[in-house]
Length: 451
Image (cartoon, rainbow, N blue to C red; front, side, top):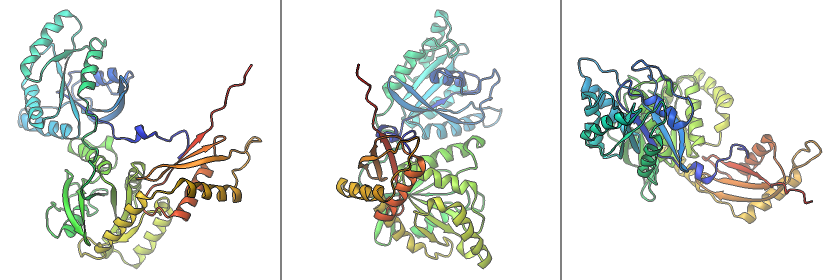
């Protein structure tokens, strides 16, 4: 990680999630664009254009949050209320705050009331936006939305921006200081089982828990909700989070599949260590690599478990080793366990691997030790000279652990290759098994010339 893309401590904290919900064609995507201050969401005067559920980074009055545009619900003659309730519950369950958008020119509809019933049960904060209010007469129409029982309706015009500031102020006022996905301190260590669909996540949890508490089916994607389970592995109690398998791409998913992938991301954020399950009987896929990358980028400890080992023969194992050397080499720091969730082979080894990964994740190096290491390293392998200049490391400190993050104060910008070299040598000298290591470069600011 270089100085250009190094997050600050504040940026690495989970941000609250705001789900924008409502029936088709009330102007949700237009309102999302208005809040973002740029044209991101697809807008068309046709109900149901927003088929993909997409999320955006947003900010107002110094508060950062994630805005999820959920799209509308295409109601049909049969099962309309059930369909709306299902979609709304999925959207609401991933959010900290819900922004309900209604059309002030139409008034309250049965679809609006179906969503409201779900909102009331959720106990989540709700901000009501009465959209398409372009003038004072529209404000009178918006006032009728009090009858939804969600408190004050905020009249806005997503197209013209009228009232959007007041709406955002109200939204910021109810944003939680701590997102619901952020783990609370104390209690058993949190472990997320993640992987693409049908690799055996639920089977593994059942094997560890010695009970069939997860639905297991050959149909990929059977598990939709993350379900927390206290499980004893060895002599240690862990809080396991069983998650739905990630789809190929979030933007290609729809309905419950999209929200399942959101929840998987949420489970990774909640966890301290992730057990990434890869199907040993199939070639390592782009999905597998993407999930490994997600865990690393979230800064979580990691164990890689190659499941269905009983389904592999000698030839498959030969090719698997080649795939691991070629594709998974970037994650060689994560402990690897070859298991069979079905037969129970080597599942008992997961406990030791999880302990090792957590130990690496929590490792802290004293400033004295770190600078002695950096002194030896730069003396033996100085940074290459670039344009007649040779940046030097002036001082280093471990900014924090979980994951181990190092701030290096330097006389100038350093090559990414050299930063990766430092990370590799840190691992060789101090271990850090099972954890990402982040190295942030902070070049000294140039002082302006006097005179």
